[in-house]
Every structure is written in structure tokens, then in C-alpha cells.
Image (cartoon, rainbow, N blue to C red; front, side):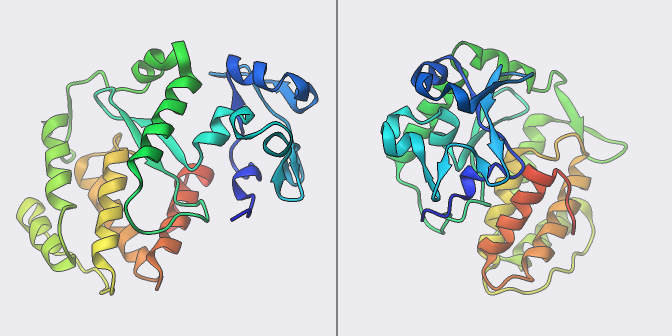
Length: 246
């Protein structure tokens, strides 16, 4: 698409591992030291990455795809960690190239390879630092449940085919009625809720509070004729702004 949005670095930065530094030895002027999990990152200016020229990547043009930083090759994929330390491959929907449909398994496999290469010998530490050490979580303010049961409940709720079925299941579990606005693409909205539930953005909350937030997101998405545009906005809030404005 050549939109270069991924190179704009709006709300994120491109961090470099040891192998990236070797590949980018001819571009030292574009690299700076930083604090955190990685010690180096690409510099940015008012347009984004300073290696961006006429909406194209200098490294890609001058050296080839294989010389680009691993974080650039991974985008729009990313890695999150589930409660049990299992790595979870996700897609950042704010990428303008995201469309509905199935992803080629070869692309998924390659993304996973790049992520493992990015973290290299730090991958196990990355998983351990982001997992939950408690074997139990909360169903609501008073009742504790296991993480396995919470995950099972999430799958049960958000594998619904439409809002009516979702409402019936929520009535069954929480004994409350929900009022979701109708939409021509309810199946896609619920699919996205399941994706958010698996990402575990809200795992510090009780399961009941998480479901309430996901239902607010569902109502927000009904405002969009094209649900993907709404998903893009939600992803921006979660990943870039780190706050939901619903």
C-alpha cells in the first residue's frame, strides 16, 4: 500500500537487537541508545523514522528486504503473553493493510520466526516477565476462579454467532440482560471481542468487569458501517494511547 504508516512511529518505536545492529552497520547515523529491554532503537524526526524517504524505506531500497530491522519485518504482527506464559501472536488492526479473511499460514510462520529472532536469547525471560504467577483470578469482586476456567468462559461467550446468542449466554452466566445495538456484521464484532479476550489486555480486572468493557467495545463498533475501521480505532486506543475513549 506504501502508506508508510508503520514507519511513522506514531506511538511506538523500532527497537533493535544485536543482529539488527550488524545488518544496519552502514546506517549508524540512524541509531541511538535507549533504556529498556533493548539498548538501541532507530531515530525519528517529524515525519517518523529518519530512514523513510518518499514514503519508502531506504534500507529496503538500498540493501533489500532482509536487511530491514526485525520489528519492521514483523509489523503488523506483535507478540503478547498469556497468563500461563504462552506467547500469543496478534495483529495490530490499526495497520491500514488489514482486511477480513484468513491469513496465509506461511506468513504466520514467518512472523513467529522473526519474533523469536528479535528476542533471541531473551525470549524465555520475556515470557516469564509477562506471565501471571497466581493460579487464580477473580470472576467478580467476591469470587475467585482458576485462569483455566476464566479462559473457558471467554471462549464460551465469544464464540457466539450473533448478539442474541451472546446475550443469552451472558444472562446464563451473570444473570443480567444486555442491550447491544444491532449491526449487519455482528459475527465479526464478536470475533474481535474473542480476539481481545485472548490478548488479555484486561486480565488485571475481574472477568465480569472485562466482559462489561468488551460489551462497551461492541456497542462502539456498531457505530461503524465497516467494522474494521472501528477495530482500527480500538487498537490505536489499546496500543498507542493505552486508554479507551468509549
